[in-house]
Image 1 (cartoon, rainbow, N blue to C red):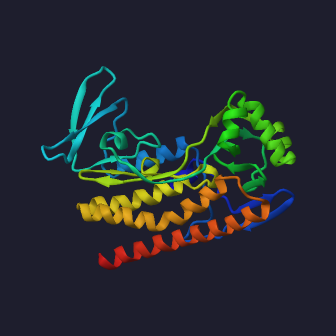
Image 2 (cartoon, rainbow, N blue to C red):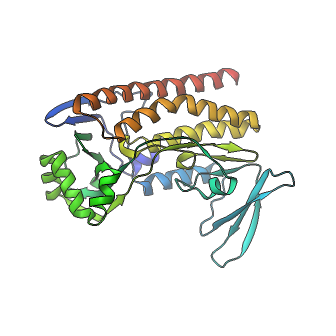
Image 3 (tube, one colour):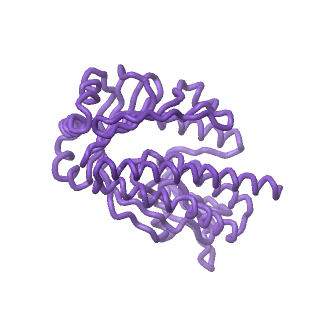
Length: 323
């Protein structure tokens, strides 16, 4: 948190929901000494994580590519085979190999980690970063068939995204993301579209065609998965980094325990916390709702998030009691 604040990550103290012309503003309460919510750029967050890992004793190596996993005679994963920039192969032994390598995880593919829960829906989105927008907390916009979000982040920049069903993205938006971005913003909130048009865009707009969410088997003999490699849900509810950091904490404790039983508890604990979030996110991502319906979904989402925080608090308290 100190590193995020030092990098100028703004504290978000309100979140505002726009259901067509109805506006509901929700204050973010300080909790546990933390003043609000944070949405750092990945270059800020990744640097903070790498610095913390080095401080804890990790060796960080760039410019290598995972080629394969090493296995013992009985099939247990015992390390990785990597290729450096010159094409040289090197085997690195490990007590456990952790794949934190994203949605299309190479580790997951190599260990054949299968999904056992798959979402039914996916949203496409176009997003970019803009200067000159008012820093007034999170804003989420909803009209039937479209959604948009405004997320303040570092260096006076604001992330703005426009979302729609994945089929519409494929049929209309992907061929001209800029025009699609403007069109969806205008449908969702003409006022937001005008504010964004007055802002100064930093870099290119980026498109995401959509991917149905899943829960993969997150561990096996000598390996584990975390982050999007293990659990991905539609980004429309903007909870992915929270998912990753929560699961990294759960997995770290399992690795410290050093047993397959500990890894099994990692999976059980994670699933108990996320299944409700996973399901309500899939319902929102369907766009098969009217405005009263999506408001009720957001109330359920809020309750699931409160339950997630409560469950993590209880989990930490149990660890302290055992220690």
